[in-house]
Amino acid sequence: MSHTAGTIAAPVTLTEGAIQELNRIKEAQNIPDNYGLRIGVKGGGCSGFTYILGFDEVKEGDEFFNISGLKVLMQKAHAIYLLGMEIDWVEGLSNRGFSFNNPNAKETCGCGTSFSAG
Image (cartoon, rainbow, N blue to C red; front, top):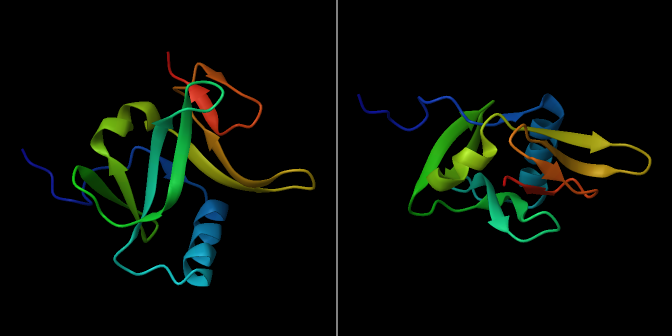
């Protein structure tokens, strides 16, 4: 059984606040429609991995998901680290930005954008 793009459930969820903020950024920065929101991980950060969140063009090996009308791109290899993660937009007095609530993270550091999956 083969899946076509957009039919498999996205491994991550975006809260309503995150979607609103991402759409605002996309509009404010005139991001081209053929770009999608890239969610991923890269080595580095204080706990071993840092999250990637930003608009990007499609690359080889990407999987596509549609989350509330937002085209999301993710490298297939990254899904294992991101499965079940919720991305939220936080706007508080001392903290403003995207938060990553990842059930796979064994340790997170104070900044909340770096984690260890060891």
